[in-house]
Structures are given as C-alpha cells and as structure tokens.
Length: 220
Image (cartoon, rainbow, N blue to C red; front, top):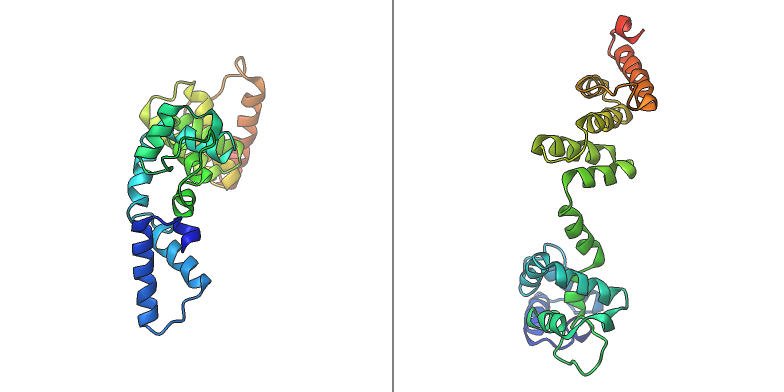
C-alpha cells in the first residue's frame, strides 16, 4: 500500500477501504490484490479523486506538462521555483524544495501522468493537418484520412488543398477504397507543371481505381 500511496492519507483510506471489502468477502489479501485494486480504482477510467482532478489540471496547463516531462527525462533540476510551486499546489509533488531534484509524490499519481498520455495531449492540440501528416507518415491511413477530412472541413488547413486531396487519394488507395481514390483525386487534380511526379502517380492510381470499379474505358 505504501509503495503506491507513499502514505497519502486520502489514497491510503480509499485503498484500504476497497481492500477491506475483499477481506469481508473472504479474500486473503495479497500484493496482487493491492495492485489490481489500485489499477481498478485509479488507473483504468481515471475518474476517481484526486487523479481525475490532477489530470484535468495538467491537461489545461502546458507549463505543467513540460515540467512533468522534465521529471520523466531526469531533468527535474531545471524546473524553476515558480513551476515547482505550481506542481505542489496542484498536488503533483511534495513541498520539499531543499533538493534541486523534483519527483512526483506517489506512484499512483506518477502512473496517471505517464509520458504516453502527455504526448497524446500535445498531439491533440496540433492542427488537424499536422496530425494527419503524422499519421500518414506512420502509414496509419485510416486515421490520416479521417484527420484530412477534418482539416478540409475546417477550412483552416493552411496548405494547398490539392496536396491534401492527393494524400487523401493515396490513403484510399492503400486502404483499397477505389471509389474514394476517384472521388478525392478528381476534386483538384495535381497539375503536371506543378508536381510532375504526383501528376503521373495520380494518373496511375486513377487508372487502377477505374479498372477495379469496372470503368474499363476510363482506366485505359
């Protein structure tokens, strides 16, 4: 219990209360029961205090997210006193400022603020076009296509829509959605004078797409 809570009164109370229910049900509580109960209470839906409140505060404060990232990277000594105070007031670290190193106050809070989750917060704040391009580079064509559609609909993509439609057509081609290939690549076709390679690639994809959808004349 102390491994997870570091003696936090509230966390100890809630965890011990849940474990007491197991004892009353006839269970002989072992370490695995404690681990399972912690994950069930705090690290599955993240909707139990104080984890829910802390995650909400972190999601709204970029400076705090950066500081937590520094802690995970072993660079906590670079965090200034002002940010340390914010971390303390938000319930993330203890009040001991005698050391330059900063650590998250207990394992439950640490696990609820994993770097992977912080990364998803940063990614969600990027424009749709940037997230789409990242997914496209990862060859996650389903996700990329959905984000390209969002970028086009928002009309804030900030780049040539012909290039977006080109990538959308490629996503559809890779997914075997040949109707989608035809739809997107004929909206604003790439001009040969602009990007010759893309121009020829679009013609190849369109030829295959028309063939696969039964329009032989157009495919030729």
